[in-house]
Image (cartoon, rainbow, N blue to C red; front, side):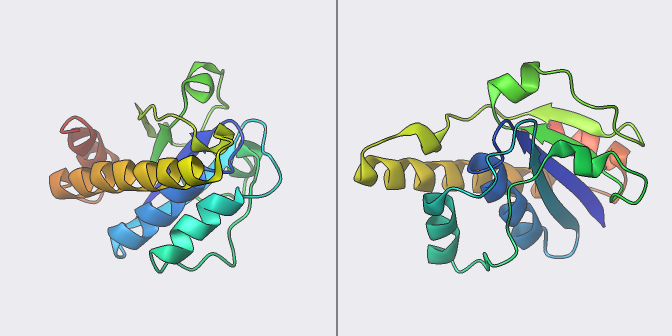
Length: 155
């Protein structure tokens, strides 16, 4: 199984959606994780609502620091995907194992104040991540970092 870490600054919206989608769509081939450089402390309520509406379990989701993935007992990370431009521009920790890196810049739905527009934006983000992860899986021809690197080139 390949482990994919989805990063954004606050780890409350896009990266939380990505974590769940990687695991769900990966069907045992991929395990998703998420983290942020400055975690908000809890997932955005509309992120949780969106995931629940699509039938995903939400009870174990939490906003966490990327530092959790740099310690000795952390899961081995095979790929790191940044989903916000600010996280992509930050100096990331040195990840053990030199994982494959990709940037999937997506607008942050968490800052939309109008309730209806916020829900629409979260759904659009969910669908965009779903499409990219499905494309990644379609191009994945193995279970190692080289296969991941080739698959990311198809997106």
